[in-house]
Length: 397
Ligand SMILES: *Cc1c(COP(=O)(O)O)cnc(C)c1O
Image 1 (cartoon, helix red, strand yellow):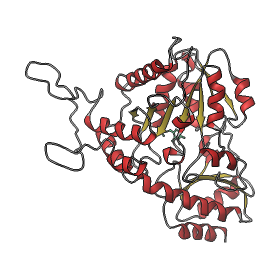
Image 2 (tube, helix red, strand yellow; image 1 turned 60 degrees about the vertical axis):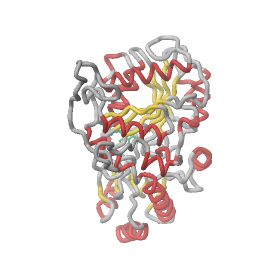
Image 3 (cartoon, protein in one colour; image 1 turned 90 degrees about the vertical axis):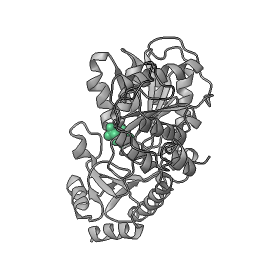
Image 4 (cartoon, helix red, strand yellow; image 1 turned 90 degrees about the horizontal axis):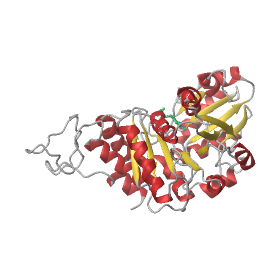
């Protein structure tokens, strides 16, 4: 089935008891055993370990990304932690220099005592990736388009480098989502999402997930170092990873509530109709902004003038997503002024919701930020594009 159909039907088994077409929300934390005390087949036991709403959501997420299994978390950060945690201590990770800010904070802060280290490189510079590889490098983390400069890493080229050294590749696919980029088809080993963004789509559910690759893996690979220092064949790797990430979920307990799962499943039903509108609006807005004298540069991979357009065209489908950033002529003062004059675009963090948002990244990220001071990040919503452009026109005036 195609993604539009999967978004509606995958994981939706209705309710055989009542005939409800929409699956019921099951809040119970515990489930009854059989008369003899044995566990009833197919029935959950305790909701942290698993529950009907989470299983339904995970089935849908796995189907959308084309994976064999999805593991849902209470946030994108918890999902990311589950991957870093399963690498084991004294591992080294290579990640993009303009990665989602708090992903790097996990390594630098939460896992410092674990001996986890990282090197930040420009993921579009393949030579820099090769030079950053160490003996204990176990993972290359790709995030594309990147945040907030919208750089496009060539996933296939990164996978090729990683494969030659038995290093695993994980992709944070939060921004592109499978509607625009299919990381498993490009050979990555794990996909991570903050479902808070486009999957949720309405800025009202926090969540995350990790998706395990399909069987058989599109690219056959052998790993010597992953995870926990064991020698594992490709087939086993999928199992080892899915087990360690699943354990981090069920034992670690950073799980989404049944209501979060129910609401996210419901939001995903309209995912495939929201995404093309985000992309069409973003393309039109980027084209408009590029022509304005107050704007120094528009970072949007859909623009022909963009330095990453060629890679984006090869790697992305159905458009180039709903995210962009702009460099306002001047500095922080001019950028902030423009943001404050917009009426439809709310000055707020986050992205991927139906409403348009604009944000000054430098002041959000703090003193260690690598974002230019005149940069504004824009999450283009699904309002009428004429209204969005008119909003910028009145702000420029
Ligand atoms: C928001 C975001 C995260 C973190 O997810 P939370 O749901 O906020 O924990 C990770 N990566 C990217 C690209 C994001 O946009």
